[in-house]
Length: 138
Image 1: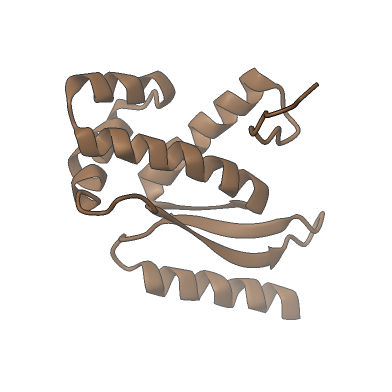
Image 2: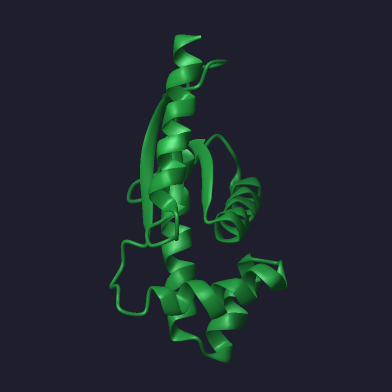
């Protein structure tokens, strides 16, 4: 029985889901925005917010805990040097989900998961939404 289990399965077993979320959170912190399905974005938001909370602490133990999930040391450095201090005064809600609409191939609902206070975010979201509207009309 699955009583009290709040983890979304995402059609994967545990090891696949863990690896997929690790890769996606690495891409999110590297590019500061990714395009994915809404179910994956909602699952990824928990992990990303947890990693940013570690980065706000900034100590060695927090860095080692982040390195358990994110294998890329350059991305971990960016997380602790740039992203963590950027959110120092914010008490959560570090990510934003912008809904785009259904994917053309399988009608999976797509969205953009992005960091909230990233520079140039409004222009990028507007361009991505214009692209999605152009794909729908074509």
